[in-house]
Amino acid sequence: MTLKINSKAPSFVASSTSKNKYSLKDSIGKFVVLYFYPKDDTPGCTIETNDFNKLLSKFKKLDCEVFGISKDDLKSHDKFKHKYKIKFDLLADEDLKVLKKYKVWGKKKFMGREFMGIIRTTYLIDKKGKILKVWNNVKVKDHAKEVLETLKNITNK
Image 1 (cartoon, helix red, strand yellow):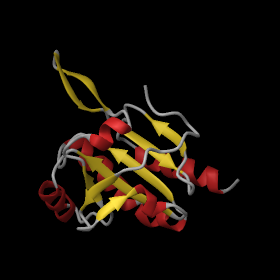
Image 2 (image 1 turned 120 degrees about the vertical axis):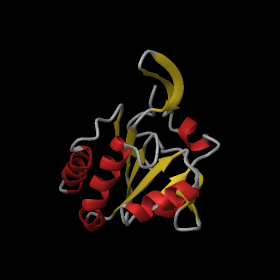
Image 3 (image 1 turned 90 degrees about the horizontal axis):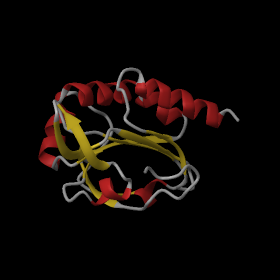
Image 4 (image 1 turned 60 degrees about the horizontal axis):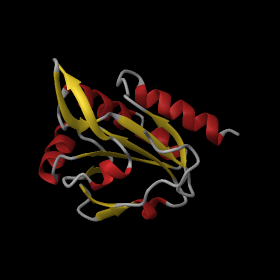
């Protein structure tokens, strides 16, 4: 279901908490971590976001940008970002265009109910815009650390 390793990451433009539109093309020449999460200020998403935030300087040292993306609007993102002093931009995809391109919008089950939602997924994209690695159905504990380790292994080669 997910996008293939070594395929080109789908290009997109999304509203960003930087107040500018962000385009994946802006990051050519850098590594990119694009993590898709269900909702601002919920337990799992907060842990995941805070972990990426704590490790941000290490990602930056490896020439890597980090972006969180969900279908929350910018107002929600701004509040979330401010509350936890998040140092990277969050992207808003209210019309689900990016979520669908990256195949992270799908059926979810919760307490016996089925509904459509964001499947927690992380993409690591290389400097030319190719997908290096995909994490599906992410478990948030130590996830950011694992992404960082993967990036370290790639950049050390």
